[in-house]
Amino acid sequence: MPEQPAPLVETTRSVNMAKRRLLILSHARSVIASEGFDALKLRDLAHRAGVTVPTIYNLIGGKTDILALIIEDLVTRLKVVHERLGAGEVETVFEAQIDTRIELFATDEDYYKAAYIAGDRSGLFEQRSPSGIYARSLQLTTSACREAQKAGLLLGQVTAEKMGQQIYGCYRQARQDWVNGYFDLNTLREQALTGVFLSLAADAEPEFHKRLLAKIKALK
Amino acid sequence: MPEQPAPLVETTRSVNMAKRRLLILSHARSVIASEGFDALKLRDLAHRAGVTVPTIYNLIGGKTDILALIIEDLVTRLKVVHERLGAGEVETVFEAQIDTRIELFATDEDYYKAAYIAGDRSGLFEQRSPSGIYARSLQLTTSACREAQKAGLLLGQVTAEKMGQQIYGCYRQARQDWVNGYFDLNTLREQALTGVFLSLAADAEPEFHKRLLAKIKALK
DNA sequence: CAATTTTTTTAAACGTTGTTAAAATTTTAA
DNA sequence: TTAAAATTTTAACAACGTTTAAAAAAATTG
Image (cartoon, rainbow over all chains, first blue to last red; front, side, top):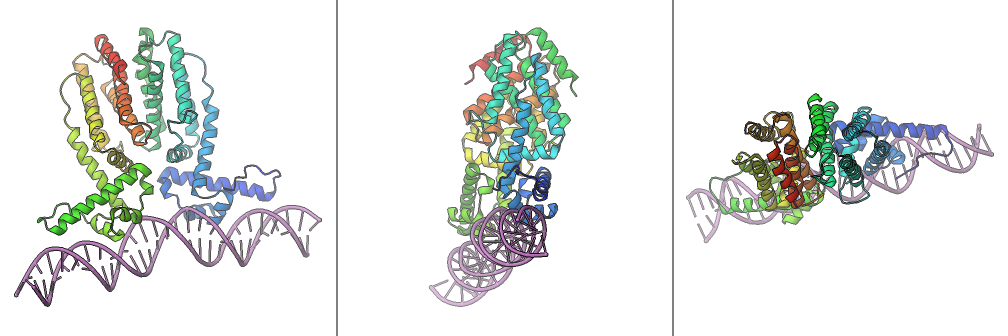
């Protein structure tokens, strides 16, 4: 792994290197997203990017390193979106969370599909590690449910843990189907929100329940 | 692809062939389930099964054929379980459906994990084809929801289509997490049933709603 | 039971892939 | 411009999936 993110001085060389690095990665993402990770051949990638194979090794590294770089970038980009749980009613918070992610995905669908595929491959979303992405995301969802219970919107007949897991699961399922190319971002939004609202509705107080069902009907 | 499923006469030769075919496939499933499809090397597989590589080609075929055979077998086994939607209350029907599958998976976890991984690889679960596994499964779920509406258990504020999609999604998500090795079959059952009951509860008439929540609490 | 035919297994090779070592080239700085 | 540093390339390696042709085994036939 070369691993030289930012050179101290920006010579013409380092600038060109950075440029080509990005070019190579861009082609890599495009191939992975459209044809899968197995379809990424280093010789083909080199040809597309107008370089030779060992140049890729020099600039980025091997196949594992390409994957690692794509994942690292995904994690960085997600972190920006992740921590800010906006204020407001629960359903609006979840809606905003999902919309923020969809907007992010829309900026470069190929990239994000590729990144999630790569992440899956390398166990990025494993559920066991308490410090992993899964655990952190689940915790956020769960605590939002707890807030909703305190606010009296959810009755608490279902524990916040179960509700959180269920809601996060709905989003993950929709996202996975999108990554797999089963449907587009609009459907991802519709599916994810339907799932979230439906799950909430199961334990909602009457007025909130009414609001949620209206939201589901309004979708699409 | 050799593709000679049942010889007309059972010579010692054909019996031995069938035996070794099964032995090779068994090792293949074991490797795929524990280390992933990429970890399956034909030379290694041949060594494990006590044969040489071209023998695998003679008996089964290449890597694609191994995958195809595993998938074909999965589809056959699933078909047996699939069509029989038992009678009774909706939630019992769903519970039985899930339990039947879990019991099936429990007979050979390695096998079924491998088969689902292989199926995913080859687009077996694509959602577009109206005659595919996805469409057929979804239709069964949806019509069960429609029945529940007719029986007055579901109020119909959510369409049977949306409800069916949601319920089937819950099961798929739990199954995928199990296939990925995130949790065991017991948790798969708990997760899937929680999702199904919770989804139903969102549109359930009061008495049914009560029953569903009690079932959720009783899980685990 | 023995010779012949058929089938199966094997040894050896081919093309493609990821990867790396050393040669050739380019860029930088004196 | 020229010497030094870094980068790109040429060329090769090992591992993989796959196939061909020869050897071995089994089944058939007299």
